[in-house]
Length: 86
Length: 172
Image 1: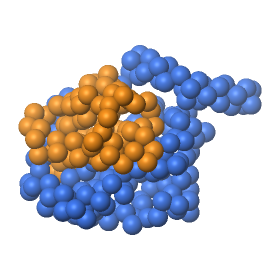
Image 2: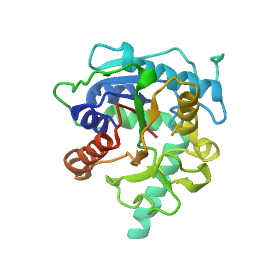
Image 3: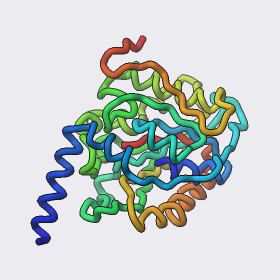
């Protein structure tokens, strides 16, 4: 997914991607990434967990405004099935 | 022989689905394309004015579209174009390499179209680009070149044409 992200950024469109595989992301180096230690198939969290999905999406989109350093990997502490999303 | 290979493949898929650490181990030891430099395009306007596009590699496609090729061990570098006003019941997932049972129940788990529509209605983003571009990921071997040289740049050009001002990507 990182290669695809890099191609989109290279044409001049800013990008942010969720990653569940930090080691891969470190190698492929997309411009901005948000890492979650979640199982595959759950980049936005759990089914029908609207607050969780909104929080993750907003955090990721916010990175488009706040991240200034290419290659930044954000790591919010939203622990799988532990974090309470308000 | 072919049957044996298919059986082996099915077994591996089952293992990957039920033992996530196996996939992590694969990722650690697999040789990924190492890249030079990092492309960079700053956001040109505030998020609340920007048109956002969604791109995913979770194997999502419309029921009416051909599914991704799951028989090729190198994956499928092609993509599907999904209108952003698609109804959830028109969408399916073809992907053997991850457990998509949660996403089958609620598409937002891998493709947060409804969450994005809420953000648009609440004025948190400027708008949603007309199309979602969907891949299946898990691309290996010669298909990596097809992705890098052909399908990824093609999607980038399409996104530009669609008026996308920022892109949010989700993996499987």
